[in-house]
Length: 83
Image (cartoon, rainbow, N blue to C red; front, side):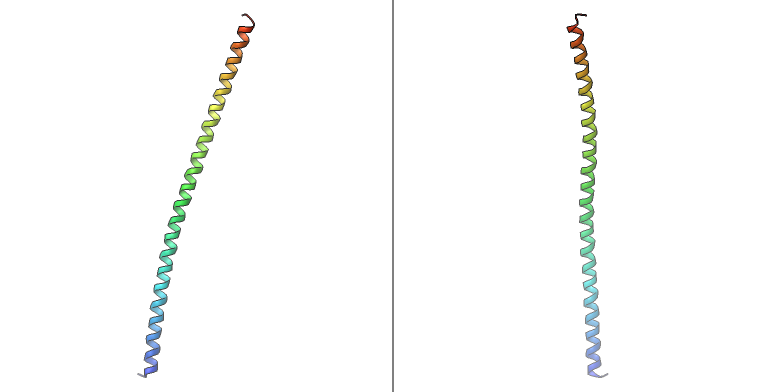
């Protein structure tokens, strides 16, 4: 085999191995970043769900306060009327 052909084949093999290693490293990095992004999205979704639950509880408490205030007003009106 000619020396030039041998050098070319060794260079081709080295380039192929280098490219393959680069693709694998890039793939691992991409996978890691996707996992981190999924964790952040999950944390965000949990926050949204908790906020929604807090809003529901706040609405319920506000309704209870309105009912209690209405009952107090009724009692005050009853006592003012001397009934």
